[in-house]
Image 1 (cartoon, helix red, strand yellow):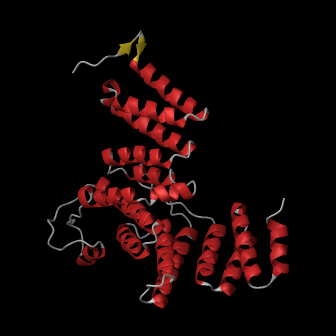
Image 2 (tube, rainbow, N blue to C red):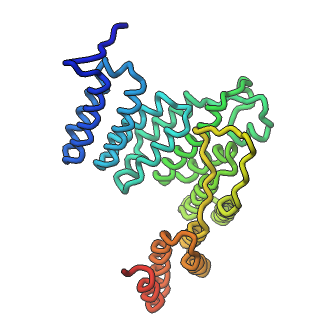
Image 3 (cartoon, rainbow, N blue to C red):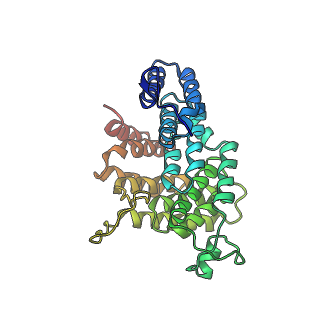
Length: 329
């Protein structure tokens, strides 16, 4: 295939660079509609469409501009292109989730029916479960797989991306208040990555939210399950990092294990007890979070929630004291 390498004396690489910079300038000049129109034309241009590197960069730029312009509908469009073309790279799912955390509009876009259908199709078609030769019957049951499936070894890339996709789909269901289906997908991801601190946290939160719903069939059991996963989350988050083995290869697509500061762990426990109405434990953990100095950037959130608890408990003096100490400049 013959492909043009230049136009009007400029290389196509220079044209592409200029167009990307032009789109950034348009968004900075509050002309986001025009910027996304230019990106659409670039994506349809035959001279760029066959260049994978340029298409990836163009869609990443489109995601960044969607975040900068607060246009989540464009952010999801460009993110879904990356997921469709690179479904077995776990970082594209992390990028999708990270680009939609800017407020109520992003949450609505994140949990929209189109996104739910898109990720459900990804799970059904791209990640239709195949049994691995090394699986035990308990693992097959935990993953929700049918024992009669063909036994074959999935590639490590598929096995690495699968828990991330399940977790993101669980987040989408949680945003839509479907906590029981969300917990099911979290559990499938948990069977693949039981030592993921964030996954244990989201499992605990999903069970607590489900326990607070009117249709909960066993409220106390679900609260106990939620607290159990939160305790596991704290155990993983506060554990000292394991030393890396000498000469151990690193995989850039595998998520590193991030140790969370104890302030954040204490705050999350306080917020969990706040959710289910245990005021004594709530104030205790919020106070412990305020007394912990490992991550003072979370003190304002803990102080605000603690002031709310004191206000609702008819203790305005304590609420004013907390607000004066932590919420004023």
